[in-house]
Length: 113
Length: 112
Image (cartoon, rainbow over all chains, first blue to last red; front, side, top):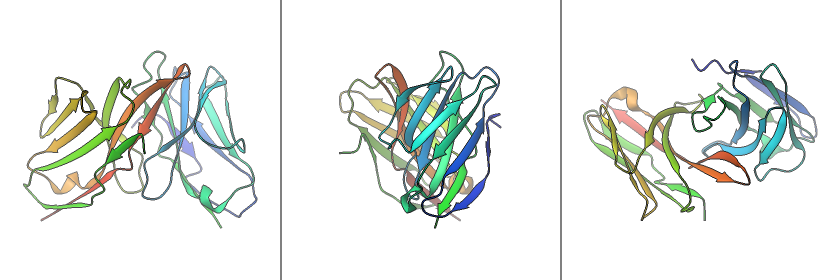
């Protein structure tokens, strides 16, 4: 087990709605990254948070936003959901200075109808 | 062109077979390379890091050719439990932060 948890495990939403996904990292992991994995594809980097601030972002629109909290938990928020947002959303965290060793959570599977 | 490209698969092999996966990456400045394994509907898990000198972990051997920007994974004596998707991953440092760039994955199915 990686010690990284995510909630909920599955979620069904309709187009136009908003969703919040949650991730709880291991104690001491000050960096968290979020990825989107569409069916049949590899995970795509959404953004990264370090010490509660976004410090890197992939090619995703502003309706994808996030938060990181002092207790090593984080959130991914998606507004105005589109059908193509249906995917597995993964968070991954790492210890300070050891980014390349990322620990993935089990993911949240989001279905947008 | 995708930053990380892999053999499309799927690879269907009998138990005991040797199978090789290939991967190419586009950013010559990349420094760290990995193979991850992902079981159906599960999260990716690190299988092994890949070094220029090549590295081996039991039945698994990974190779890196920086000049050709090519990464490989060899699995010997395939087991049923090796059935999974294998993701080639490159660490990219750009804009002051690191991120992992994943290939689309190659699916392996080992049959009796």
